[in-house]
Each structure stands twice: as structure tokens, then as C-alpha cells.
Length: 259
Image 1 (cartoon, rainbow, N blue to C red):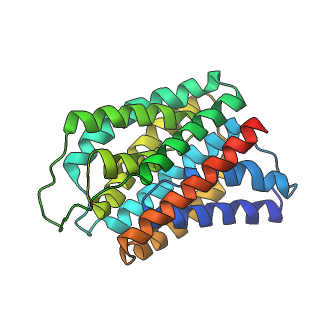
Image 2: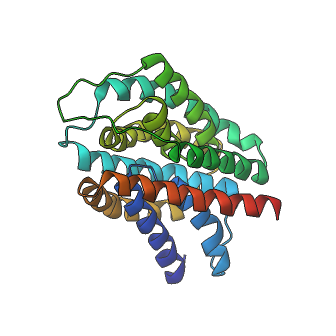
């Protein structure tokens, strides 16, 4: 690996992880297209969709655990919600990560585009902010939360994501979880999801460990910084940042698939 390769991969990891920590996602929604297109455009590497998914899977573990650590004393991590959604998403992501070996490059991109499009639609649906203070009891439908987490994990596992970019709108719109609880708790759930996804990718030999290691270092630096910034930002601004990021990514992937 030459210096330019290391710098570009590090910057992709840093920018993606900063944003992921800020808005409460694992970062694959941002880093998947960046890894797929930027190195190729600059002529330093040409990753396949399988390789990008493998790199993303490993990196998300460290991006999310760093973000969770930043939220550990915030009072917004809900253990009951983490148990319901985390156990279901672990099984789903393991199946998706392993099963992705049998899909083509275009099929993986197609799954990614569908997930991103669903997330965009859900983010723009009207929703009422639920009042919440640290220490309050959180009411939600446990079986529904688990079922949605399993489906999300299976689909996200295919593209090497932890699924936060679809989990966040599900938690906000369907389960009606308060925004700050969603941001913090989704990081914990996606950390669990990333474990299952990574196991599936490693077992099927879809991981490039050199680029993954560079992305991990970038994540450990950038994700906690992003999380601290996110805790101080207006809730509506955080929601719009996430929605616009997902919208831009989904449009780009659809254009690539059809044109």
C-alpha cells in the first residue's frame, strides 16, 4: 500500500465515521459509495462490491463501539430496547453476511439501493417528537422491534452494513422512540449487528484486512468526536443531515444500477 492509498482510505473512514457518530449510524450508508467510487476515480484502487461490503463490515464494529462509548453516561442508552433489537439483528446480520457470498455485485448494490430508498421515505414521513428525559421509562412494542431488527439485519448484512441507516427511521417513525434515545441506542444495536455481519464476511473470505485496518484507525478517532458534536446539536438538524445523506446516496446507487 502506497502513501496516497493510505491517505485516501483514511480520509474516507474519518469523514464517514465523524458523520456516523454525529447522527447515530454505523457509517456504511456513507462509506459504501465512497469506497466503491472514490478510490477508482482517483486511480488508486478498484474495489468490488463484495470487497467494499467486507471492509465496511469490519470497520463498523469499531465506529459503533466508539460512538456507544461516547454516549455511555448520557442516559439515552435504553437496555431493554438494546436487548430486544440487538438479539434479533445479530441473527439476521449473520445470515445476511454469510449469504451475500452467493450474490452478484449488481445484486448487492440493488439491495443497498432498496434499503437506502426505504430509509429516505421513512425519514421524510411526518413524525411527532416524543418528550424524554434521561431516567424516564420508555414504552415500545418489543416483538415488533425484534421482528423489524431481524429483517433489517438480514438485508444490511448483505451489503456489509450494520443497518443503522434503516434502523434509525424505523425507531423514529414506527416504534416512536425519542430522537436522542434513537441515536444513542441505535449505535449499540448496530454494534451487535456488525458482529454478525463481520463473522459472515470473514467466514466467506470477503474482507480485505489492510484497507479495513486503516478504516478502523480512522473510526476510532472520528466517531467519538462526531458523537460529542451530535449531543450538542439541534435534534431537527440531526434528522435532516441523516435524511439528506441517505437521499444523495440512494440516488447515486440507482443511477449506477440503471445507467
